Amino acid sequence: MRTNEQLPSDDEPSASETRLRDQIREQLRRRGRVDVTKIGVDVHDSQVLLWGSLASETEREIAVEVARSVAGSENVLNRIHVYGKPITHAR
Image (cartoon, rainbow, N blue to C red; front, side, top):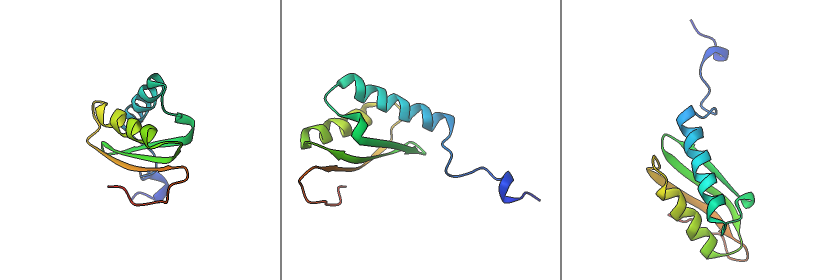
């Protein structure tokens, strides 16, 4: 019988999830129009979660566009807030 210490952790991303996250972050850096220090990228089962705060709606849209364009990204959940705008739940 396995103990909890032997079970794989749901918190640890798989190698493919880490690779996809890194590819998205690299593409965002290359684009140069998004402050990647202000957002986070999490991946679970090819589902991408973008979160954080950016200065403009344009930056937010670019971040989503980039995440969707990277191979292996099946769905992007956008939780990026734009400074000065009320927080709403984006779909």
